[in-house]
Image (cartoon, rainbow, N blue to C red):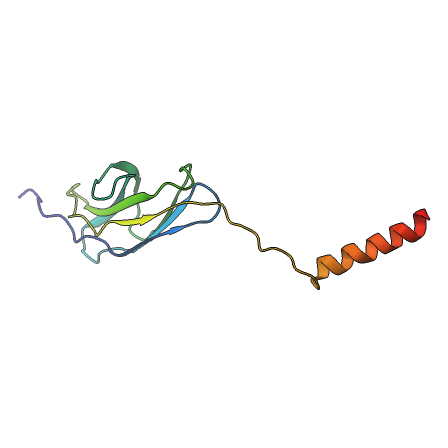
Length: 130
């Protein structure tokens, strides 16, 4: 008989800004079904819309993916589905979203090693050049 029953959908799906500029990191738990074969990730910029396939991961063990080349400041919505060995696709997971951005470095305040080093070098430079 032909297999027409999909494996269970992935669970614990998460999305977070990778903070590297234009990237979102996704994570999930794979289903435990014996015929589970791969993961298909859909991306959209509209909440509630499945969008288009961002990637298909042909692995039973992979549980994360970093989606890159995205527009910073634009929310991206993801739906993760599983596929079984016969190609049957699971139902949708709950859609998750994240907005990519560039990591901002903390401002250095007085008293940091760098500030002390800069002051020391400046003092040496002034002494040498005067």
